[in-house]
Structure formats: structure tokens, C-alpha cells
Length: 275
Image (cartoon, rainbow, N blue to C red; front, side, top):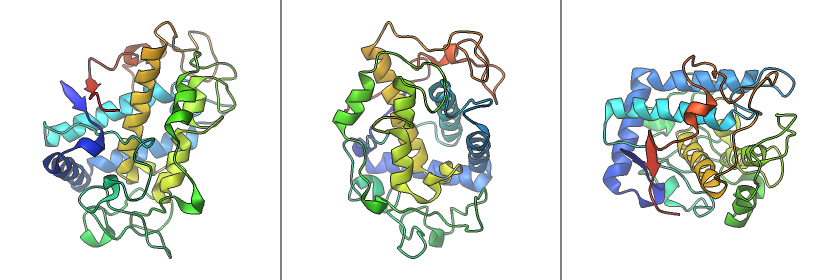
């Protein structure tokens, strides 16, 4: 069984094997297909039209399936690898081991955001950006730019306390757990992290930054935590809702999976017990 661990608890060997698998997926071209998929959906999902991956109830199951497929791709390279998660309520600074040169590398330089250290630095030659929002081919970050702060545990708990999964109008103006976690309302959780990291993470091509996967693995864990806190709560909407994915509707780009199929993560992986 795949066990997703807090990245702060990974051994040096686990970090190296995870990074090596990322680099191999990049070298083979398989990594960029995930960037292309994500960029296409984030650009196409709108509040007033068809929406699947973002601004909608299926934000969480869509990304759960997306992460499962990516994790399986990593495991096709190295079967020992699992997606770690970044608990940004605890590892809240640029001094976190997450940003060390043996793992994700650090922030970008002031003049152009280019990441200069770590395995994904442009100078290392292993991480060219092929799916781009502009002409720049190097990974960019601006960690904590503008004095932004990552969400606190108290802010995160306030979202986990919400008992209703989602509600009309089922978009970025909705109330409920999903939209507050996604970050369009309230204390802003998921979206705030993308902006805090900056660079590619603040664009539709955010998977260009490998920290995307660790961030979304934690968002996924928060969904599982919410389900455990509210065992009687259900995915909504159930049926007959225009422009969004109901409980038993299939989710593009897949034709074999519905939100109902993804409510239980445990057939695919578990999380460690670390907070």
C-alpha cells in the first residue's frame, strides 16, 4: 500500500528517489503531459460555463484522480516512491527543509525569479520548461513575495469545521468547505499557496514547479481529514446540475471515473500519522 508521508519526515534516500523519479518523468516527456492537462483545464474552467477541475465541486475529486495518475507514473519509474505532502500550516517559511538544495530548491533571484539551486534549477540542465505561459524556459519562484503569509493551523481548522461540502451557485462565489479550501472565499487556503510560491505556481501551468504535487497532496489530505470530521456529510451536488460534475457524472478528461468513485482514498493510498 502506498503511504504518503509528510515531506518534513522523509529520509535523505526517500527525497533522492522522489527527485530522481521526477527527473526521469521529465526526461521522458511524460511529465509535461500533466502540465498540459492542468493548464488546459484551469484555462477552460469558468464560473458561468462548464467547469470541472477548478471553481467547482469536482475540484477535489478531479485533483485526487490527477494525483493518483501522477503517482502511478512516478511508481512506474521507482515503485518505492509515493507523493509526499507539504503541510504549509507547519512548514511556513523559506527556511523549511522543503526548499533545501537536496529537495525542491529555493526561491528565485530578485531580477527574474529564476531558481538557482537544487535539482530543478535551470543551470542543472534537467528541468527545461516546455509547456509555458511565456518565452522563459526556466523554473521561477518568488517565495513569500509581497509579505504574504501561509495559512495558519487555526485558519485551516476553521475551514475543516464547515459541515457542508458545497452549495449553489457551485462556483468561485459558493459558500461551503470546498470553495473555502480552494481559496476563492474566506481565509483562502489552496489559492494562497500558489500565490505565495509565485513564478509558475501562480499560473495555469503550475505543475511546472514540482512543489505543485506536494501542495496538492496536502489539499487532498485536508479533504480526507474533513471527511473524517464530518462522516455524515456528502459530496454535493447529487444530480441534475448544469455545468458542473454531479456525484455520479464522469469527469473529463477521463471517461471511467466519477466523484463517487473517489470519495474513499484508502483503496489507492493512505497518509502517515504525522500532523
